[in-house]
Length: 455
Image (tube, rainbow, N blue to C red; front, side, top):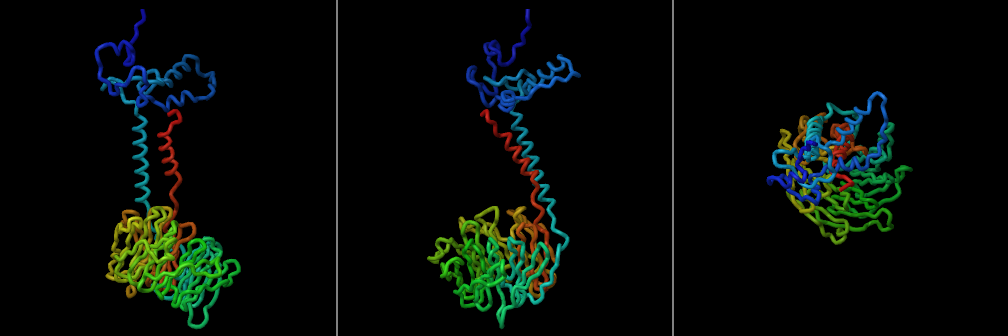
């Protein structure tokens, strides 16, 4: 007579003394939460051809096949499970969830280790002389285009430095008492826009290195310019902001006056929103479609000095960073969707009057770099790296011997160049290298555990 062991799901077991189950379920309807769907899918879709190895006999192969067909408890695997195990007598087969949790914790540890290992470079990767650079906080005198050419204004001259071959080209020498006060490459780098002290705004062809157009509209010096597709926006000491359509014969699209002092900062977001900073300490946020009616979206008045440094966050589209001038020394983050200040950081670099001249977001890691200066001290002219969103300070670079005037970054987002009143351009490999693909691959593998076509 056969000796049959009654397991937990046998009919006889169900008719015996009532048992309390972790998952009571039903005798005729399978309980999906108890099934190992991944193993079931593997068995159903397995098309692997068996290769007979002569070193192993049939008995050994049979034992291996039986082991591979067992469930997590060592019992014959059942694709359909109808009722849960008695409490404290059967291990949970939800081991896949535990594995996910362990993998998630491991990935979090990797992320934390990566952040803790980020360090500032010990020094510059390159230093270029910048003779006759104007010591003017309000000017925006350099821009690094996607063609890898850095345009920089030195006194009355405009120079182009090619990062690929280090060639330097003198574009022009302004006549009379005029000189460039702002410069910006178009997004496709076909054009270079240059604003002048005399209120002139010139458009230069990048290929021929010749001026092709003068855009009218301002009455005083143009301190800042910014591109948004075919729209070139300029801000001036005359307090006006003008949107120019560089394709149209009549270039002025809109002309607004909200600032009560010189417009010294302009930045477009990827979502057709413009931030403008003024010497009256205010920031205005504009929507392109509503600028013709002079209606602004927000006006932020929390800074205590001129706002030149503006930068839109590349990974949070509704976040704007701003930096204040001499009497302010604060970096502020704004939620432009709600019109609120997220946080305010006093840069506090052991100086009572330390202005913020520039802000650059790191596109590869969640960080933002700020440039600072102090007009009478050689010890507080520095660049500071801040971790986002905590805004904890990672470190500082203090190599300029006079105040930092402007910042911009390379097209690949790895290098930042700072222009100083010490007549140097200093290049810093501060934003790289990019995050390894291993982290993203591990994350994809983790997510794949949550998806199974059989479901």
